[in-house]
Image (tube, rainbow, N blue to C red; front, side):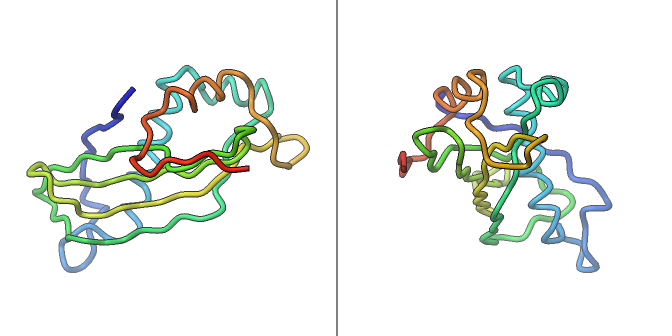
Length: 145
């Protein structure tokens, strides 16, 4: 897979008093897209509950480049920036772009897969490993130990 990109619906509740998208809504768009991607790979909330694993974020950072207004059409993409060789940890980069291709924001998240019973970082099930292998990779993608 070379790209995972979806349009996002702007909501009135996403706006700030200046009538452009509030800063925290950008994070919501990225989280929604990650959830859509993981689910598209067959890793549903039900599977995570049954197998006692799930993702956790350690860092979420946004670089805001252009404001988004209510009338703008936006798209959010996902690419894997780095992954630990044992698949326990990951970093994703999301670009939020306007319809004309202008980058409005870049969001980077660092996270891991945890055992939801032990509450500790764990090697994820094979389905997550396969998802990681097939995930679109950022041009600066790297494996780390």
